[in-house]
Image (cartoon, rainbow, N blue to C red; front, side):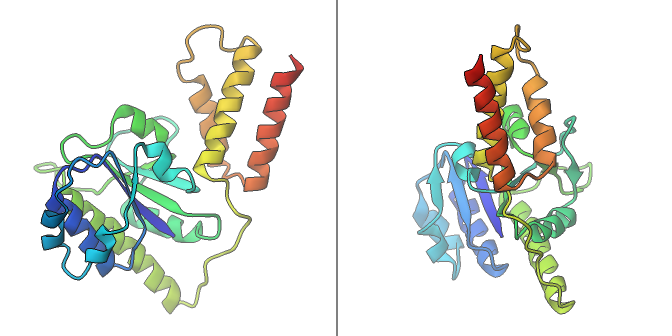
Length: 234
């Protein structure tokens, strides 16, 4: 249901603590982009009873690779960005559960020093932040994963207690499929002269509307075919 995505983690103890937190909270899917440390022995000393998770993270080069098969990508950032919702950790967890039938949710965490870059924030569908105190707003990476992991677990436990099974809507378009639609849209608009100058935010804003529509995989394929056909007809 949920994939934890870590970008550029540098601290081996954080990796071990994240693995332990995931095991505590019933999560086992994680991806690491641009791994900044290879001290897995240091990580293992912290990953008590969760060492097997350190043996099988999905190691990738980019955020795109980490989330390509996910239907919803949530970046952890306190920034305000036009067109992106700002959700609390409980809201992320409840929506991830509601979307479980559509596909996997990725919760993305930036590096320990500076978090997500502007480009990575733009790349995410929605944003979420933990409402920390102003005196110390930033949290340790592993602690932040614990907060989101617990909210996901709580949402699952509450649904189980209420006898609510996750809905099974049509399979949602993956991030990779939506990115292909975005690129086809960019090509079509540029060929038609709409993007005569610098692109700025036009394609991003138009694509954001499609992402908010939560297209099914079938709908995404139709959009892709239509946009590519428009490109060929010119």
